[in-house]
Length: 175
Image 1: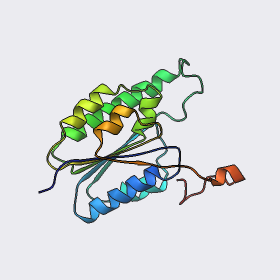
Image 2 (image 1 turned 60 degrees about the vertical axis):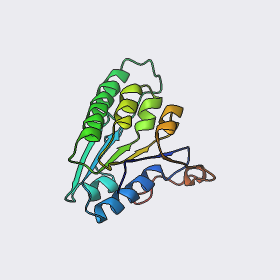
Image 3 (image 1 turned 30 degrees about the vertical axis):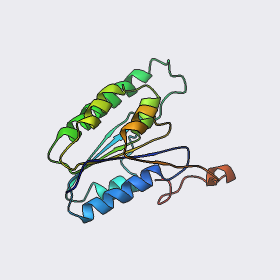
């Protein structure tokens, strides 16, 4: 008998979303139906979206408005909050929907950390997940309450990154 699973990939190292999309591939290989909700991101030309969104069994949506301003008090933050709140509504609906076996909430921890969305509605939805649903969440600075809600948590630690050596982001590696 399968039971619900809640997995979290967090930390400052590279590989959080990459690990989550690897799990998505595994789930699709087992015939599961998936919903991907990306927070903050708004670029539909990244490799993972170009690949997975064309597959049967994958519903994909981004809830981002581009790069966030450096100043969290900037008036332009409101457009980012509105987008992220729509993403949270979509996430809660997906978590409760019988239409999806696998729900990936990419960069939700970043959205929480930037105070774009509240934590409590997400926690309530996670606590009521049933039907053997698999939930995978990613992003830096996962709140302790989200760590506590997950049954499996992996922290990605950066030891070295190409950016530090002046290597620009590349297709197939960073996007």
